[in-house]
Image (cartoon, rainbow, N blue to C red; front, side, top):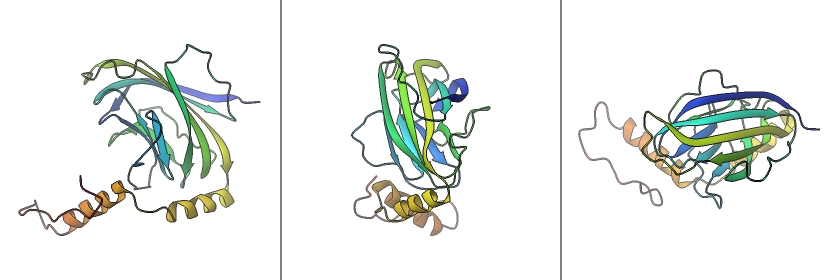
Length: 200
């Protein structure tokens, strides 16, 4: 039977570019490129929750469970989805894009590297895109539980991540690093053309 072992809420989680990220602390990969779901998507090492507000503060509650908990009753939330959450380090944290985890928020994958499930529910999404420095009406409930964890599972998922073809965001990240490495100081010339398939 599923048990909720920890619940933490933060009423002012900063978000930018419509993205809450759930990422491994030391894992530097590009975002998932495509998703059939407009609420959340994932790839090994990283998941993204797409918010309605571009830049602002959200109300977010995290629940850590031992197994898949019952779904909330109909009408409690306006939208919901469930995706895989693969961690290569066991140190998944939630924060806004290029931000820091809210104080007091726990790591989401305390059982270590492997595969988890993440269920996302929301209400008030897309109602306020001018919410900078305010608390906007978007509310999120994010529930995470382990599915397949441990050293053997971690090795399998590392192989999956290593064998994944480069995405558009991977190419852009590599290109940006190459341009930065070729510049001794502030850019004084036009940078080179991005690689094919990685046009910003």
